[in-house]
Length: 321
View 1 (cartoon, rainbow, N blue to C red):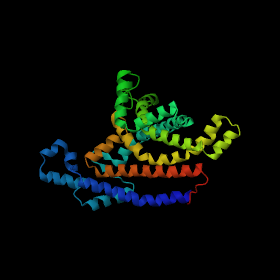
View 2: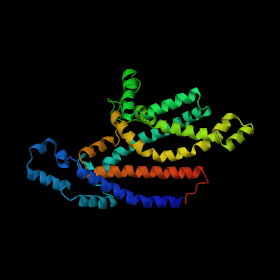
View 3: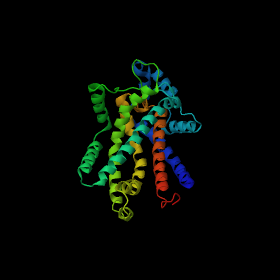
View 4: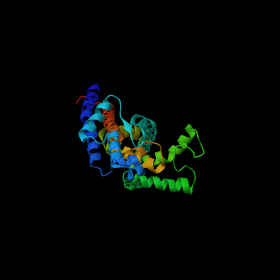
């Protein structure tokens, strides 16, 4: 296990270097001018001399490679730079928001895995039955539904029509204190929407894995020994059928991050979505590079977690192979 983690850590270094340089290169080719975005309406009447001075202060007057290298060397020292869009250090901007994004994404991911596994097992019990047809039809329908559309639909139905859940935000509008009860109440809709957007893949993978496992010799042998159907399904078929699902955990991380950004925007959740949008539209080099590197690390950790879980679940899979 240690060798696997070490190899992945070494592999992550060139990946992060390439990703951060790519961010600066894409931002360089962007039509947005960071100086005009920073100056706002004042930039319309500012002299060229003032704009040049502002460009030098922001450090965007340097060549592409020089800007990237300055940011990278500073980041290795723990200094992620200052965000000219949010007018605060990048580390502080991310630190204030990342916790809420992690809370939303983790809650939704756990819900998607639990509910997807349950529905997948129900569908696999009787392939072709009415439960199987209903569950798979629902999964394919949700697979085609964009997260932002699901979010708007949830706001209309649960917040506006029924009035049982808040439409967005972290706390009630009249509250000046963040309490656990309010956060939980406001978390229900965005977490549910994000979980539903991730649900189809877990349902289909579990259904396929458990369905295949039900035809394996060990499962047929368990049935021949007279074990209860529930025991055969949960302790034999489900365990074998879950192995392919473990690889899905890592591959869903990029989609989870993208979906979380969309859901945060719809529900005004105070995560990193707003900061990401502002960094992209304002060509905020330090903030954009830090957020992209953070997302890349999350994807790499997700893939590593999937491999570790697979190796722990199936002893036949070696960590050092």
